[in-house]
Image (tube, rainbow, N blue to C red; front, side, top):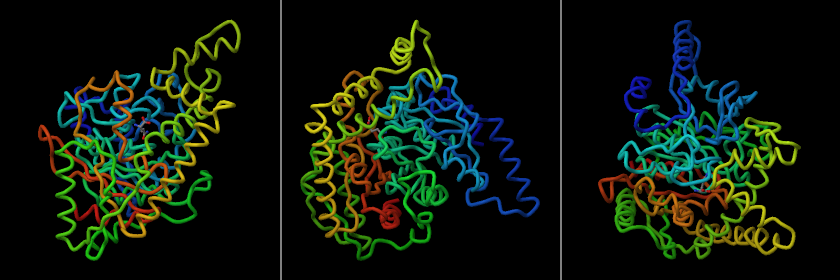
Length: 445
Ligand code: GLN
């Protein structure tokens, strides 16, 4: 059924870089056989899953939607891919993204933009726009994305699906092609909070192959879904940065009312450094990216432009292989890390990061979870912000702080705003309190 839906709508949505139709059919038949002979086929038996194309799949092209990885096939699977396979899931394809996950609209792809299935003249958000669109268009019931500054939560909001960035370290990053290693986190998209919980349970838990992986078992989420919010303290951030449009603010108010009616207590909290998140992020994330992307040199992976000597080959390959936004990040990051500027930019941004974490810790002493908009606006038109990087960066104002702190966050679809387009409400929680975040999310469904 999902392959038929892909046949019907993929031409207009362009959620995928690669559809693995034959492989998916063969894998589904294997799962059927397991059931026939009475073997346990796993938690996600037969469930089609779409994977963001920055997660390594053995022998299957993995592009990061960049020309520079052209022709490269990873020799190994990402840990999440192995875990999904062990759970009986069926990989249905690799989804489009902003090149190397840098962007908020999925327009910065070497393979062209993805369109929002709810309104094809609009963006699906980004950078995991392909994975969000794949679920919204019913190409797969669940998908995986990665979130460095909001790349799961913002597209989830714009496409009207659930999107989760779990606690940093709860899902292995082994085989996720790195953007900002201290910020990157894999998480699920789904139609329901329960489906997202199940998928996250299947992929989370310690992995010795990732040095930042937390030493604990899979997240325990589904059992707690029905606990409700009675007695829970929901924080309203009184000094939240401005910029959310009136329709989004209105939905947020309705969300507070809904939780209050369900027995939660709404408490006011302050997070004074919240608004510095964006600035700190645009030093830290490019700094880490400039280092992580140094490996794409024409020698080890994919694309190469031949030249007279090695240095010229590096330069020609990187000039031709990377898109404009990736080059901008590499230059910003290299500058922020260079001798004489390191302390003033990167070092200072790391201090701001600590301030933000301290402010959140103080807020979480008063509230169990916090509620904010996920995205400042509903989905914008294709081309609207593509020539204005700063306008694009502002899309992540509300999502970035929890990447800097490592805390979990998720976006839940909560009605519609302008033009009848979906609005997402973001729920934030302290590290490892993902189950409480899911409890609140389930009440908002
Ligand atoms: N939009 C942000 C950026 O461009 C976040 C991207 C992400 O979370 N991968 O960096």
